[in-house]
Every structure is written in C-alpha cells, then in structure tokens.
Image 1 (tube, rainbow, N blue to C red):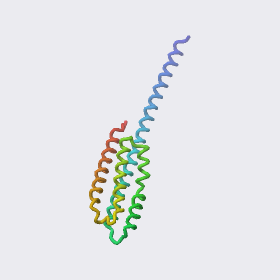
Image 2: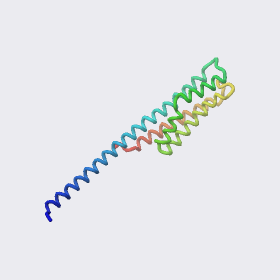
Image 3: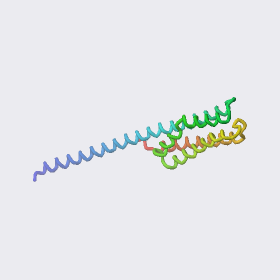
Image 4: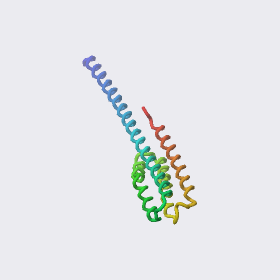
Length: 156
C-alpha cells in the first residue's frame, strides 16, 4: 500500500468534513438570522395592529351622533380591519409558548375593550377607563416579552 495515497485521501476527507461543518454552521447562522427577522416583523405588525385597534376604539367612543347599534358595528369593524386576529394565529406558530400566552391575554383585553360598546351608553361607561388601562398594561407586558424573546435569540 502506498502511504502517500493513504495520506492524501485522509487529508482530503478531513478537509471535506471541515468544509461541510463550516457550511452547516453558515447555514445555521443564516437560518437563525432569517427567523429572527421574521419574528421582528411579526411582533411589530401584531403590536401595531393592537395599538391601532385600541386607538380606533377610543376615537369611536368619542364620536357623537352614532346610535348604539352603529357603534357596535363600527367597533367590530375596527377590530377586524387591523388584522390582529390573523396575526395572533401567526404569533401562536412563531412565538415561544409563554409569549403566545401573553399575546392571547392582550388580545382578550382588546376584545374586552371592544365589548364595552355593548353597554347602553359607552360615552358614560364607568368601566371604560379601567378596561383601557388594563389593555395598556397588557400591551406593555407584551412588548417587554417580545423584546426579551428577541434578545434571547442568538445573533451569531
């Protein structure tokens, strides 16, 4: 057996394995980077949808000259138009489970604010302020949880 051929083959195999490991590491870095970017976009879109809905409902509460039925209908339209419900499902897929739970709680608080329009006169509803405050706290907790998740994601 020729030792030169054996040494050359061994060296080639070692270099090949090293190249494969390097490629795998690069792929993992790129995959992690793409996943993190997708999370950042989703988290931003979800927060924006929740905030837009909150402010839309607040604006609707201040509207004068609308009947109760018109306010109820518009409140539902405001919630539906921001796509918060669709984004919540995406949160369930992409976010870690504890963050998904916080997203659920925030959405429930938002729906509870929307449900205040079921009251006979939302403009004088004594529960409005507390409900809006609870939503604000939930939004802040969600934002903190999202930031925490993004910080814990490795950025190779």
